[in-house]
Length: 467
Image (tube, rainbow, N blue to C red; front, side):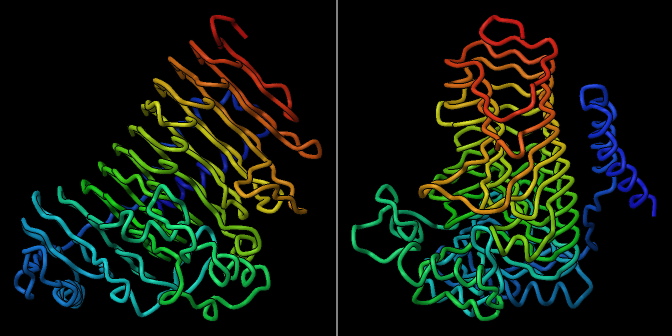
């Protein structure tokens, strides 16, 4: 009850702060962030160990360990929980399906190699692709409807994706795609899935998998409670890397993500609540962290905002954005806190980014960013774009609402093309943007702002000019 009361207090305050002015309430907002952290249940596990080798596991890099993982996890779960221990070695396997009260622990020197045989990821499971639910290949590590699960240790999770496996399906030459080959954009693939979602076809009838070209996520806890990912390294992912979906109480601590494939977002909480991402390294082929809440009609059908997301003590290197909200954002995002992070790479496009359009709609409100060091970014320190679209103009009837964004104690050595790049809608301008104690030393264009209420500058300097 105590944790629930703290969380109710936190959310109550955040909504109140929208009305009373963010610049006067930042200290209390961060107190509420701390209250949210205290409310998050981190799973604990009984002192029982189930060694993979005792269930036939063999770390020679070539023997399939799919059955060994299945048996060890089932035994651990049946006994009431504990740790499935993966010792030093290279363990080839198909997808791993976690069960309640199981901690999958990789010792230092352990590496799990996920199969390159697509048939190993069948039968189909209920999953999601770019904000649209479907029946597809299993994520590499998957749990649905489970409670108290973890992936921990100092080992490596290697998806073995590359220009000869999974990545060509993105349909981009740089990732091994050959002109004329079938890919996710071919007829019957993503276009068909998105049409099904717009026509409210039941998810159980959206069947893909074999014969199609839609890549699985790497780690996906779906409708789970009390999730921990700690210490491990992810690399060579087919698609999004950590994807908490419709999950609550998620802690991601000390994780390294080094994966430069297509759509290799580091962490994408979607329809999820009470998520703490701390002390992590992100070096990715797409957004480092991207907070999602469904695409277009499917997001509105589900209707679960992502909320109470805290990012602290992280390092962002390559990526399209450091902390991003969107573009799959139709159910909305609220209460995002980012602090004590470092963002620095010639291949990092933006520090903070919000992206949507009038097909997505949705809302973003209550975003607090504090004590962040930015070395360099390519495009912008803060970008808010309500005209987002990769494949041409994307216009509909769902006007997004963006409000209450505060950047405080931010230092930027090289801000790239823009300090602030904000493009709102005339019918719904972006509102209540505050910069407090922000210094951007070098940027080509300090401000490029359309359809936004006046930005509030407090002790802010851009290119040596005080605003």
